[in-house]
Image 1: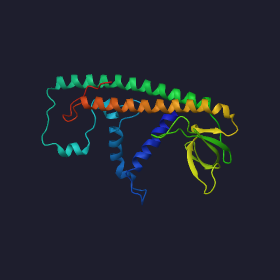
Image 2: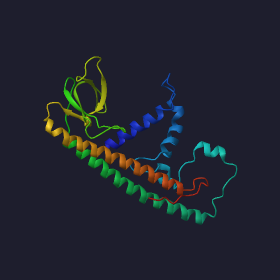
Image 3: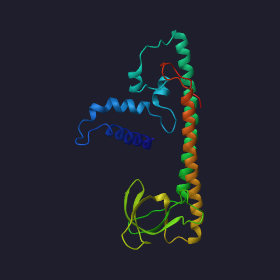
Length: 235
């Protein structure tokens, strides 16, 4: 629970910081309402809906929609509006629970994979860095590992600055996450298996992202956001 609170505090500070001036850091109080609007209207990755959709049954209108409106829309009779609102909120809860369960399963799978191969690195260690071949000219015969590389220093969030030692001439510095690093003393015979695991994980994350994006686009195309009425979510 403490981790969730700390994560929210970090997200909230980042949200407020985007509105603040670069030359001064004392105007945050004037941007709180803007940050609240941005936070309440943004879809959360865990539930795939915005806080306003879960609490109010519809999303917040962006300022550009308010500027383009030329007429007012009546919500209709109160009983019918109340019925639609309850249906939209109930459906939103079902969609949020499904998205939450799916995201928790993905996070658990990612955590288990990382725990199994968790390694502790420090400045001066020599490592291999996983570098999957990408692009139209990439083939299965291309090298998947770069190295040896020496860790220069940590830069936060489990990222490290690496210096290539396999090239002559000017030193090349690279920033990489710990999940892409393997101790240089590890048996070379294990590198192909580790590379396959990392590639499968990256492919799974890419497919999950594309599926979520396509589902969001399909759902949004079925919504009518312009009338301000409760929307029946699809999931």
